[in-house]
Amino acid sequence: MKEKKFKIKIFCEKSKLIGDGHYIRSKRLLKFLKNKKFNCKLYVNKNNSELNKIIRISKEKFNLILDLKSYEKVILKDTNKILKTISFENLSNKNFKNSINLYPLDIQYKKFSGPNYFVYPYYFKKMKKNFSFQRKRYLNILIIQGGTDANNNLNKITKLLINNYLKFNFRIILKTNDINSINKKFYSNKNIKVIGRLKSMKSIFKKTDIALSACGNLAFELGYFGIPTIHITREPREISRAKIFFKKNLGLYCKILEEKKIKNELNKIVFNNSYRKNLIDRRISFFRKTNNITEYLK
Image (cartoon, rainbow, N blue to C red; front, side):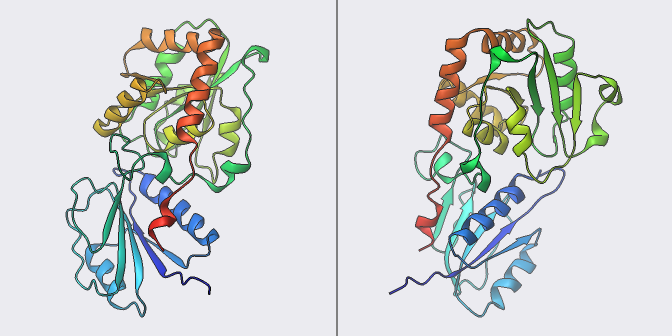
């Protein structure tokens, strides 16, 4: 007898201040679950009243998935139709009906945390990443600070890099969803390519040799391919995460003005073959995991 799969309603939010991370993850989760033959629908930026109305008018029982920045103002009134509630990064531990709290990014938790609950883009499984540091005329360094660069780090990191002497030739891939926020001088620099919004990061991942990244969703995606990464962030949760990655030998954490530290690490990645190979292998081993979310939707 075929097992019944209940409907799933996913609620998420996005903004300049919050960023795109919750929305991107929810869109990926929607596609992932649909490919697993679940009946899903995604709702974006619904307030508490709108959320409860959608729950109230639902004709069938369903599983509820919440992916929000904060859960403090979420009050679910009519919970009889909710079979199970899965919340992502519910840091306040607010209790919902039959709830499970997942922490894909917050790897310090022992349960329901880490890459086993991270939703990677569907094309990752088929994509191959090759590293050929010694055969290239120049290396591509990706500078990225999430989708929105909420802490305005991109210009500072880029300026830091172009003003520092490195022992190898490089070009910068400067990725942002807000191209108007980028220093106009960078557009005239032949060694910097500014890239705005993309439907997919596939082409970027293929070109990138080294990354200077924040420590959110993109850090996990870069880790999936083993791309050597220096984590630079000013967001408190990301700083804690970056320090854990450093302890696990998965990438150096640097403050934004630690120029010498960043320069030395870049040169080490390029010229110390053993260090680079081991770093790549460790990152792939840690980040490339099978997703376990569907186990809690049966």
